[in-house]
Length: 314
Image (cartoon, rainbow, N blue to C red; front, side, top):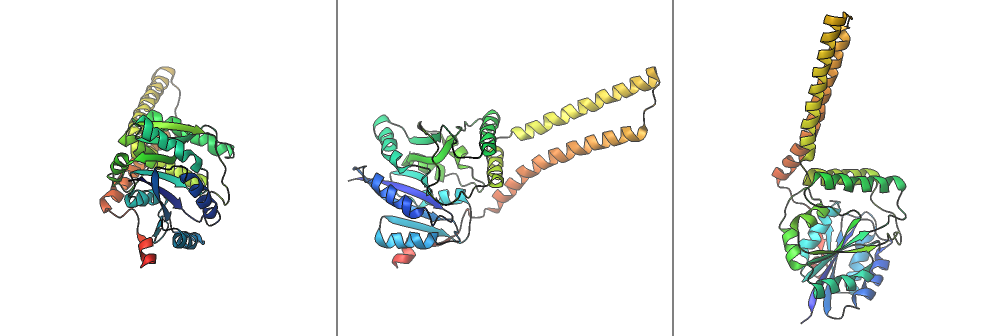
């Protein structure tokens, strides 16, 4: 009996690229002779015709499954929904824009099948086609997160990876609301092989990731997998206290030994601004962590499903 591969594709306003992706995917997956497959599209509240295209593909190909959200919950929620719905012995996550080349699937499967890996991940060795500023901050983020966190984050790593069922079950068991999958993949461990390739530009359409969304995603990663900002705030607080102490000594020397007049208003304002700045900075960092705890204790669902392929078949 053939083993099954579950392919999860997160979609948000991807009407232009889905037909290209489906054609390319089917061509490549058929080269893996000893695997059956299911293709799970997760529509993350698209506003265009993405969902209609997926439903029409389902009518032609029963290997296609889909999950449609009631609104846009984000890529992390879409990936989690696909992982929970997957039934395959092996599971892969892919983007619909063909920046994750389906041609790599056979090579990834060979590593798991023949060399004992639990996971084969992909990473870009170049960022060709990306804005220079975005590439700079992306590299900076990975340098920072790897210094702050005990969990290794691979620079250039994509969500595109092939995993066995044991690893998928471990990931699904982590029910946290605020998810940063790259960190979760590293946290659960397992033997991982990395495939490197040059960056591939989108086949059509435009990216849904702007600088602000990427910044918020980076914050999720840092806060979710590092307590260093809390330690950093304490260090900065100590340094500011030390500076204030030195300033007091200087003021004492000037007033007692040098007899230089020091403006009391200036001194007071300096101290007040310093103390208030420290307090606000520390409270801001603590507030981020408290907000995460607040959202976790609400126990809200990660996503809400509006429709699946079972509804269409009925």
